[in-house]
Image 1 (cartoon, helix red, strand yellow):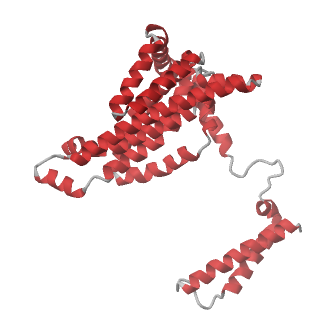
Image 2 (tube, rainbow, N blue to C red; image 1 turned 180 degrees about the vertical axis):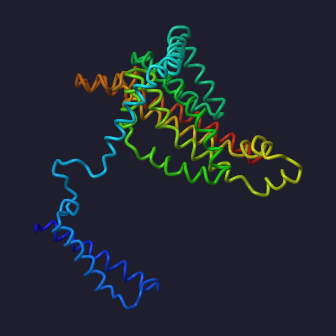
Image 3 (cartoon, rainbow, N blue to C red; image 1 turned 45 degrees about the horizontal axis):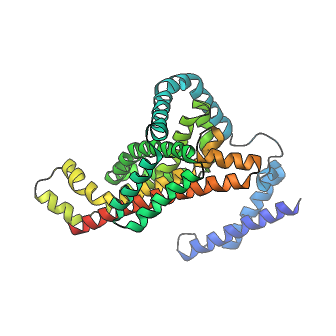
Length: 348
């Protein structure tokens, strides 16, 4: 008998003893069955099971054998069937239109509009959102710096990818957040799923997406949208739930229907939280830029990847700096609009 097995038996017996003591103190355990007797009995059962061939379970070692719970095999089979039966149809009817839209948006930003016009447009947008010239000048200077680093085209590619990903995220995440706020059962169903989505490593999203849609832009958009959706869903749900019940009672007293209360009371008052969710989704989408470059998505992430592969620290740093500048720009603009909405809501 190995020391690991002995340690496992002792840990299990000690845990059983502690649980029984707590149960006795709470009055939920028969007094005639002492904690010592329970711990000894469980330890004996563990040892008996070990001698019957169960040491592998105690040491948590499969020794190269088949897993007891073949979840990976089941997932592989399900994804293979999905790719075989629906892969072509999904690529034709879902992937191709979105890839065309991203390409059109990218060409529009890079070829149809001169870079000073885009820089000025974002500068004016920053001033309109914040009413502060400091932020506006920072945004304008950031775009000039990106252009001077000869990274304008990758930046526009990244901006188009982020824009389409956030549109998909909002189109899917906002209704889900509303449903969570309106239905307690749906919220109970969604909360574990959102926890799973936020804690799952982002690389894992790429595997089934690449199998379904192949390498390229659409796979990056879909993986980015999935990764960025949870904050928007959570904050939309939170914003609607934080609406003052007295306001809802007043709306009901004036004869407002459930739909009218949602569209004219709850959603307008929840807009600051929704904008905070959009802001967080944009930041998470930008965090996926470099990871998405590994499946062929063009943009600043690809420049960082090239710098890593070629061991060119300067190229990697300048591309990373451009991502930081773009992230700060989008973050400050969306934050400023969220603060304006919050001020406007309080003023009402």
